[in-house]
Amino acid sequence: MPELPEVETIRRDLEKGVVGRRVKSVEVLGKRSVRRHESPSELVDMLEGRRVGSIRRSGKYLLIGLDGDVLLVVHLGMSGQLLWVKNPKEPLADHTHVLVTFTQGGQLRFVDPRTFGEMFAIPASEVPERFPELARLGFDPLEDVMSWVRFGELLSRRATGLKNLLTDQGFVAGIGNIYSDEILFAAGLRHDRLSSSLSSQEVRRLYRAMVETLSDAVKHRGSSLADEQYRDIFGETGDYQGQHQVYGREGQPCRRCHAPIAREKISGRSTYFCPRCQV
DNA sequence: ACGCCCGCCTGTAAGC
DNA sequence: TGCTTACAGGCGGGCG
Image (cartoon, rainbow, N blue to C red; front, side, top):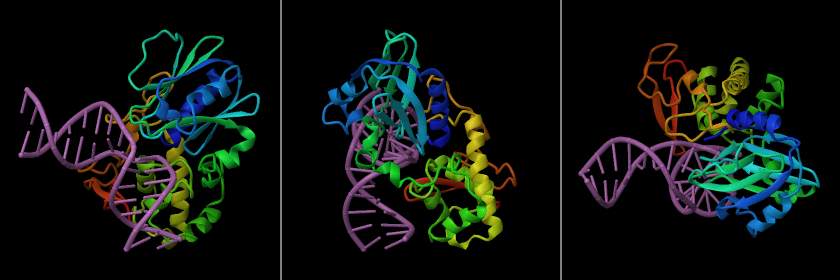
């Protein structure tokens, strides 16, 4: 499940390899991935002939800017992959839904077994009407640097459990199930602590833990778990999973205090934490 | 305002 | 062996 570090890894690789290239052709093999369009040909017509100008990220969304006022939005959902192949004749993986071929060679493939992900193109000038989710996203933990005092003000405005808050894209954008658990372990805070109950020292620990955990994960090119689909655009796995302190480690000893890592269901999601280190 | 559940999906693995 | 069931969880919507 790609979260901020995985999407940021993809963004950086695309920035190096795809910016400046011109779209030669687009082929839609799976309609569900382009469900915002009335017809797949709408997406095809918007992209063909355009040159890629910028690759940005907002939370877990990839924003690919093309000339002629076009924005291509990609969300990988649970199982989406964006893969770069040099030779478009390479055999297609199962669940390949969209092919974007470039004039100078090379092809981007959108692969997504569970089809929670999506891809759509809109006029950049119509983002507010056509892509309202963007405006509803909270701050970006790596892009939007703020003082921990300011962070504490935002926390105290809400009275909700920390895990629910960290995974609320409207509060902070880009954090999902894996990294919320890792951040809360690094901060020494339980998932069910009330956001408005933190001391100023705890606020500072949480802010630091959030920024450091996510930037470390970016350095390691994200997390690829056994039951997970994440690959970078070259089909390679990340290696941050080796740094995980709690996620997926139920019953194993805490790396800090050796108490067994606990697992609880929070809003239907597995939540891992150390019952001794996190208070 | 918030917690929590459902539906959307498919691959994998455990259980009977 | 083969079927059924649970699980993985991002996100929007709905309900209490």
